[in-house]
Image (cartoon, rainbow, N blue to C red; front, side, top):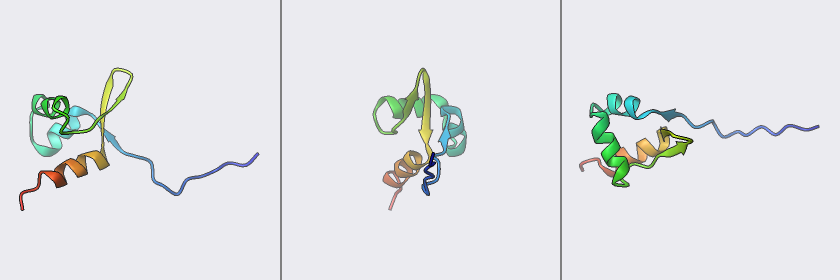
Length: 65
């Protein structure tokens, strides 16, 4: 039996609380961004997780130039 290994690194996921703490916003503000569709999330059952790549994209889009 052969096993395939992917050279792609596993995604890193954060909770709403972890994201809020990292960008120094309230959990309520992060949940509002999610509800408005500004911040993409992954729903795993009832859990909400934000991938590191989605967070980076969000921050890039909202960077002031």
